Image 1 (cartoon, one colour):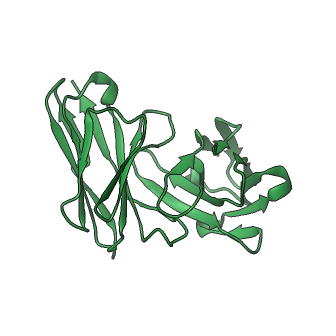
Image 2: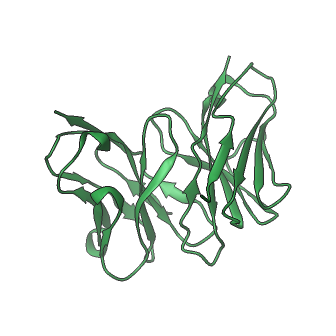
Length: 114
Length: 113
């Protein structure tokens, strides 16, 4: 089945230690998104890629970076995680800009910062 | 600016009873509207979506939602709730393809026996 896969499902890191979260998709979608969801809050978009075009949300901290080496994979890099970055990180995809913006979500990676 | 309001933070419904979760949006044109469900520790699953046409939309798991332009609402309904429906429900609005979904803060549904 076509799907959005996130690895790992649970990630523990130390304060200030860089961490990378992975997302892959078999849907062949052009757009990939990263959302941050803190406890009991709504998902909040960090950035998205339309093909290779990177689009950063205005209030996304510089500590968060992303890479998309090919259509299938997208990575979220947190350069120096702080305690406030502990959250669920959700990857999503949508087919194209001409689509109706239906987004398909992965299961998420829960990040713990010690 | 686009926004989504889910007025109810937490709702408890008896198993077998009907359910309505409220969602109000703010957007200048006809929006794309979505309801997602999230079980604890899981990602988001799409329940249903509205783009245009018939204002009553059927979704998965027996859910439906009605778009009311005059009230800027897109309420989610289910005639008979099952214990497995206990989860977090998010209403979301999107302007057009390739942009962010704006989510409401969510409604937690508890189901009592």
